[in-house]
Image (cartoon, rainbow, N blue to C red):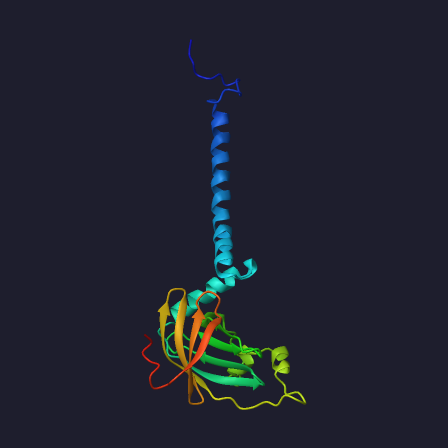
Length: 205
């Protein structure tokens, strides 16, 4: 008697229907595992770098832009300053990507990047970079108050930089003074900043 499974015996594991179901289950499992990989990666980066989980994709994109523009010498121009807060903007001549250096009132410095492809195109030639980068709401926040005057800030320039693990060490000059910043590639924040002599700060050792 043939040992081939009867077409009516659906309970037999070798039945074609059961084999098809097994294949479908494996495919579903494979898709589930593949879908879970980005989530697991984001959880790891969130834990390792102390970044909120919902910001991981943005920080990864920012780190990619920083790496892409690492060899660019960027000169920053100050857009506005109020008290101890300051916003500087510069661009990479090779890629057209925009780098924004933001110093908060408490002294914390963070870098943000905008890819050239993501920049809104002005409707006319009169459109300025400030109009493209600063929203009306943000511009209103930078208006002088009665007790906090707006002052003219000196432009800043990156004199040199080098990689050190997950950080970038860079020397920034502004107003004739230099500081050495330790910038987290992933967080985009300055983790350490200390004054250095401009004539001896580069190359970074």
